[in-house]
Image (cartoon, rainbow, N blue to C red; front, side, top):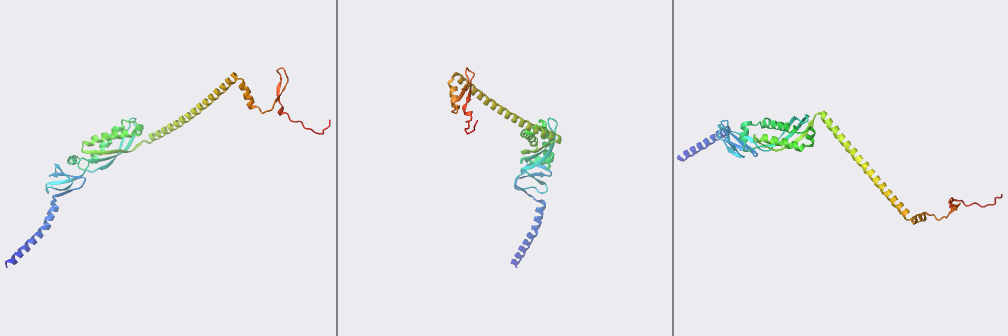
Amino acid sequence: MGKSLIEDEDGEFQAWKLALLPILIIVLWIFNPIVIVGAGERGVILTWGAVEDKIMGEGMNFRTPIAQDVKIIDVRTQKYEVKAAAASADLQDVSTTVALNYHLDSTKVNRIYQTLGYDWSDRVIVPAIQESVKAATAQYTAEELITKRALVKQKIEEITTARLANYGIQEETISITDFTFSDSFSVAIENKVTAEQNALAAKNKLEQIKYEAEQKVTTATAEATAIRIQGEALQNNPSVVNLRWIEKWNGVMPIVFGGGGNGFIFDISSVATPQTGNNTQ
């Protein structure tokens, strides 16, 4: 008799636990005291709406139900592109697209959320880049913005880094993906480049002509020097004349006519051999 009573009481106890299980699940689901913070994220704790100094790290965390709420903030590298318009030092309109890689300071996400919420891109990043572009491009002419692109990028990066650091946003890299100018200025730049290329080609052609002329002068000078040396050698050594005459002689003896210094040489080889025959006079 007592045994059956124990069994009944134990059965009633098991049924009571089973009845409490779904209620417990519902309570946990409603009040949700467990917070899971993913990799590359941080949790900002709000107690009755006020931001706490403590920041939840990655993994499983606990909060006070009803009293505390947790805002998840991504602290991984993020990319944002901004289009900015400005004027160069020579008052040329210029527009550019700036790509920024950045991340939020994981130790300051509570203050970032407190001052900016989730809207830090439009409230801080866009104005910071636009202001840095205007400040940087105003120091260079439109042509220098092209030829000194690295310096312009460095200046924009310095200004942007300083402004974003005040809000707990850390810049990683910044790149200028494009520079565009007005149509009239683009045409003027193109014409200038073409003129410079033509001038360079003409200069190279002139240098070639000058080089060829110098070569001719050098050759002529060498030939004149050689002739002068030969003339002096002939004048100082008459036997050289005879040597040159012998070198060019074809072996036929010339015929001399006249006398008293008025004769002339007649080359007998130039006279044709008379024909013989039975012609009668």
